[in-house]
Length: 331
Ligand code: NAD
Image 1: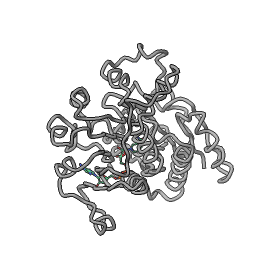
Image 2 (image 1 turned 30 degrees about the horizontal axis):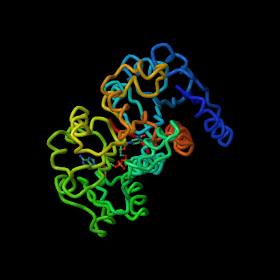
Image 3 (image 1 turned 60 degrees about the vertical axis):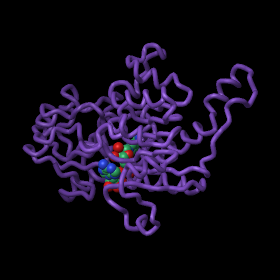
């Protein structure tokens, strides 16, 4: 069995080598992404393991199939950058890694909320300037708050456990009600009810055509004054201009954003200086002490990266051996 793995980063390589040794299967490592320049390296392999934000185009997928590789295993969840027609016409088998560590995303989300509530960005700045005073930066306590969790999937549920550990009251909205959570009576029937009650809104829904910019001017208007907004899910869930207006008016007390609607090509890039970041709206948010922006790093933990690499390799091995895999994605 011969597997080729594209776009392998230095932090992924040790987990790939560990798997390769444990399984006794050689894996060819390619640092570059799968594209027109690198697709021919796959000739002679049984399967390819990939991860990238840029598109898997029809040209590249057609060429990969011509090279005899139709077992494709993604190291991430999303398949929206894969050309579905090319997948179908070439008879590709595609797998993803639907859950690599929901706790990783939940832990960063709550960490950032606690930083906001305890004003640590402000105290960090003051202390760096020799100012060790308290006022006026008095904090809020999570255990006195109601947290509204939007979507109770794997990540939403992991976040809920942590909020409950802090003693917060948790309410939730989801288009699908988890039977276990239903018994706890935490669901509200509408987003409006959640907006009306929540001191903190924690977004954990995928981006769909129905929830594009769900947090817009109208939604912010229905929320409590000085609400805290957390988005470690997808940038498309928030209308960024509306969020900026709500921050300016004080309606929103602060926000922690691990995703941003125009993040592709910006996050995970070193621009050399703050000024050189080519997105004024993003810089507007980043300059605020009550907004914490992280460049889509919630997933970026040792556990999650190991799982992404090794689950994808397991999936690819399964496809090669049996023609199917439990994490197969249908197009
Ligand atoms: P999941 O599939 O386990 O759960 C998704 C939940 O969302 C389901 O319960 C579903 O019923 C619900 N849902 C779908 N549409 C909804 C809507 N319009 N309103 C309310 N609920 C809705 O997914 P997960 O593993 O919990 O991941 C959630 C999201 O987190 C992902 O879709 C992704 O956008 C994001 N994510 C971010 C990172 C990161 O590094 N920041 C990493 C992984 C995932």
